[in-house]
Every structure is written in C-alpha cells, then in structure tokens.
Picture 1 (tube, rainbow, N blue to C red):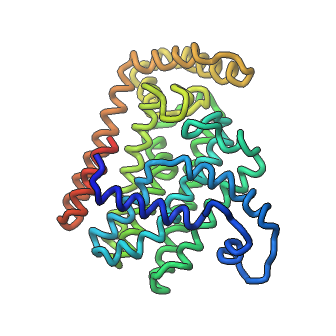
Picture 2: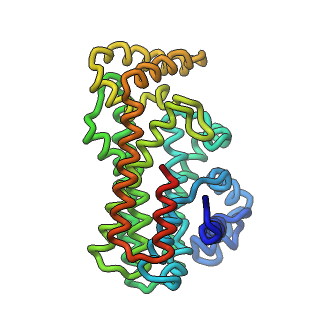
Picture 3: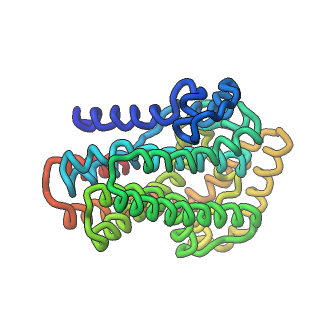
Length: 351
C-alpha cells in the first residue's frame, strides 16, 4: 500500500514526465528542446510526431524506476538532492517507454497496457521514430537541470553507458527468438535480463546517487543492486505471463513470440525429454498466430508442460530470492531513515 509520501512523490514524477512531453507539442516547445530560435516547423506535424510516445506514457505504468531514483537521492542527500532528481524523471522513464514501443514492433505484439500496441495504432514508421525520440528527448532534462556542469557530465556518462547496454540486451533477446530450438543457459539468460531490464533500474539508482553527490563506489554499488532488482522484475514478469498474463496483455503471449524465459529454460533442464514436443508446440503457436488462427490451444499446451515440470514455481521462488537479496543489500548499505524504510517497503511490494 502506498504511503501519502509515496503518492506525493509519484505525482511529482508524473508532473515532470508530462512537462517534457506536454499535451500539445508546438513550435515554442520545439524551439525549447531543439533550438535554435527561429526554426519554424509546422506545429501540427510536431504534435503528430510526438503523439505515439505521449499516448503510451499517458496509459500509465508503475513508475517504480524514477521513484527508485528519487528515493535513492533523498536517502543519500536529503530533500535537496531529491529536488535535483525529480526533473530527471524523464531520463529514466522515457527510454523505458521507448524500448516498449520498439520491443512491440520487433515481437509483433498486438496489445500494450490494455490498448492496441503503438505501432498497431499509428503505423510502424511513425512508431519507430517515436520510440527513438523517447531515447533522445530526455537529454534535454539533463541540460535543463539545476545540476552543476560536473553533475550533468556524470549523469550523461551514466545515461550513455546504460543505454548502450540495454540495446545489447534487446539484441540478445531477439536473436534467441529467431531460433526456436536454441535454449540459452541460465547464465546467458541472467545476462540478457541484466542488460535488457536491469540496466534501466541500475541507471535510475546511479543517477539518484549522482544527484546526491555520492562517491563512485557507493554509486556503483546501489546501481549493481538495482540491476539485480531488474533481473528479479523480469523473472517475475516471465512467470506472471504464463500464470495469469501480464496486465494489458494476453496470457502466454511470450510463447507466441518464442521468448526463452527462465521457466522454459528450467523446464527443459528438469525434463530434457520434452524438448522436441516443446519446440513443436512453440512452432505451432507462432505459425497459427501468424496465419490469424487460434494459437491459444498450443500456448496452453506449452504452459501445461512447463507448469507440470515444476519450473514455474521454481522460477517464482528464484525471483523472490532476488528481491530479498536486493532488499537486504539496501538495508545494509543505505543510511537508515524514513525514506529508506519506505524504499524497502516499495521493493517488497514489487514481489
């Protein structure tokens, strides 16, 4: 359950995100974020270009990454550091949403957050550009921040390092989709999760620490723990996808996309004899979906095999252990205060 302070923080985070990508992106907005003054593009086209990204952002989301950033800043540097961190919320949240747009295009996903995927609503071409905009637009938030020049450079370095990594994580995930019979090792899966999902959490924690002017070892340590948090989040997301379906998406759509999730990897470790049957069912699910046929019976058959092996329950337990490890680490490494206690409570609620 969110405390009133948590709700206040989330409201401020939302305000900062929507301020960077307002309801109407006109010429004045364009000149502010792009410069120089005197450039006069068609305001209607500017707004059309921004609408796909704005649409996805306004559908909501947990916003736990910018919340993590703000709370790390507050814990390490007090309210003054938190005030420096709030305007950096788009730096954390917009790239996440941009990656969702690109990910849905690559996976041919139909739904996102309970509505048609962005590319299904606006077209692939405009959506690719909108996704890329959400990677680059947040750099304006760094330029416009009240950080010192040294602080801005530090945030830019963090942002650049993690954005490079997240693209490699997505690349690994795509490469695995293309070969139905290729099953990555557990260590390869964990690396992919650290890069694809863990990076944005790590970036959030490090930027929060940078806003508080934390030293390099502490900044890297809170970032490392946050990356583990991202892995836990991804594993739990994989489990929920097969159990009930993620909010706004169909149960088992990871099966149709051919994702090599931890439950699938663990199932084949436990039952290598069912590899041929699983591969056939995965192929059936993808083929039927591509032909516009009902793929759900094949999806349900895959889920039944995974669940029957005990792998689904094991994957959930792994995720919970990862969450517990991050909570214990932040309990040890971060100074005890009310904000720290709220952070630990928030992390527990993610499980």
